[in-house]
Image (tube, rainbow, N blue to C red; front, side):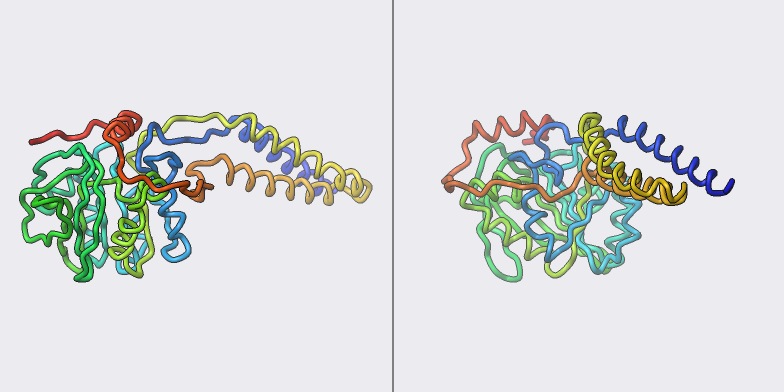
Length: 320
C-alpha cells in the first residue's frame, strides 16, 4: 500500500511539473523571409520539401555534428542561404561527409557560405540584382531555369559548370572523394513564391530533383535567425481539454484504488506531452498548408525582389 501511494505521489509530482513546464514552453520562428523550411511565406522553401517528402523523406539537421548519423551515399544535404556565416570548422565537417560519398547542394547568393567556396577554390564574381532566364545542364539535358537575384563565379578550380546566365556561370559541381558538392549562386530557385505564384516552378523543380536523384534529403536549418514565441495560451488550452477528458474516467475508477488513478494520470501525461511537443516545440512541423496558384505571372518585378530582400534582412554581397 505504501508503495502504491509512493507511485501515486511520484506521478502527481511529474504531472505538476509538466503543467508548469508546458505553461512556460517556448517555440521559435524564423525572423524575416529567409529560405527556410519553417517559413511558409513567399521566400520560404516549405512547399518544395513538403511536395517531395514521400519520395525523398526530408529530414531537418540543426548541426553538422549530426551528419555522422546519415550514410553519405544515401543522402543529399541542402544548405540554403543561412542567415549567419558558416564557420570553416563546420565546412570541413561537411567536406569529410562528402568525401565518403555524400552530396551537398549549396544554394546561396550571400557571403554566408563563403567557407565552402574557399574549400573548393571557387571565386565569386558579381552580384546580380534582377531576374533572368538562365540555362542549366543536368544528365546531359538542357533545362531552362529562372534566377532571381544571384551570384556568378569567375573561377572554378577543377569544377564542372552546370548553369549559365548569359556568359556567366551561376552553378557548378565539383567531385570530392566519393561524393560531390554542388554550388548554386541563387537560393530562390525553389522558394514558395517561385513555385506557387509563377509559371517557372516546374522547370526549377525539375532541375533540383534531377540533382538529388534517388537520394533522401537532409535540410540544414542551423545558422538561422530565430525569434522566441511564447505558447502559453495554446498549451494551457490543451491542458484544460485533456483535464476534462481524463477527469471522467478518473472519477469513475477512483474507488478501485490509487493504482488505477496513477495509470490514468500517466495516460494524461503522455497524451498532453505529445500534443504539446508536436504543436509547440522546436523545430516546428515542416508540413504547411499552402494555397494553390491562382494564375501564373510572366515576370517577377524588381520591386517585389527588393521587398523580399528587405523582409529577409540579410545583407548580400555586391562585388563587381
